[in-house]
Image (tube, rainbow, N blue to C red; front, side, top):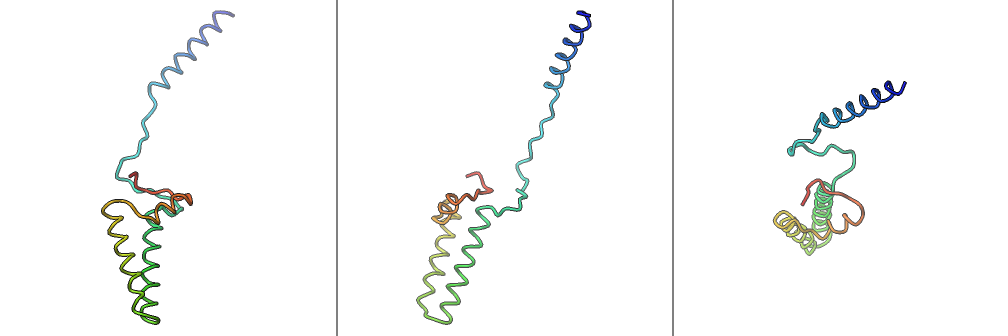
Amino acid sequence: MKLKQEARRSRDEGEEKLSRSFRPNFTAPLNTQVKSSKWQLERVLFALAGTMNLIGLILYIFASEWFLIIVALVGINQVLFATTGFCPASLILRRAGLKGACKW
């Protein structure tokens, strides 16, 4: 009886070691895109910039030419984000809980 228990215990230990050593590595390649139903930070930033540009353009057409300043500021902010990765709206959106797809 004792011999059977010891044999069973050593067999279980051997199977455990074997299963630990042959675990497959399921890391995703680096070039895959994130597939999620939630909007990522970068996507929200582009939507926000496009919306602000349209609002500024509509206000320019119907109200005053001074609203072109909104379009210019949004454009400058987009260039700033593209070159440095810094955007004031991204700081606010990160605090709201959005996560970016980029890891920088």
